[in-house]
Length: 168
Image (tube, one colour):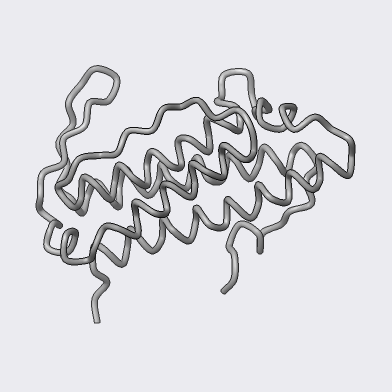
C-alpha cells in the first residue's frame, strides 16, 4: 500500500500543530509557576538573527495551510501575523487546524505532478506537488516546529521528546 499525498501532508500537519498547542500550554503553566511574564517566552529566540517564538508558531501555521491549499489547488488563507500572546497563538493554531480539516483527500490526491509556483527571495521556483511537499514544505514545517520547541526548552520549560512527538 502506498502513501498518498494527502496522508503525507494534512494529517502530519494537524498532528504537529496539536502537539505544538500542547507544548504552548505547558509553557503557560511553566511561566505562571516561575512567575515569568509570558512575553519573555513569546519574544525569545535561539539566536539574534532567528525569529522569536511567536514568529516560529506563525511560520508553522503558514507552511501547513499554504501547503495544503497549494496541493489542493485552492486559495491560501491569509492570517495577519499579529499574535503576541499565548491565547492568540493558540487561536491561530486552532484556525489552521480547522482549515486543514476542511481540505479533503480528494482535493489533494492526484496532485503529485500539479505545478506549485512560489516566490522565494524574489525568485519564482516551480515544484511538482510531490517535490514541493517532500523537499520544501515538510522540511520548513519541521524546522519551525522544532525551533519553537527548542526556544521553550532553552527557556526552561519542562518538555521533552514525547511532547514533540505527541501520543504514539
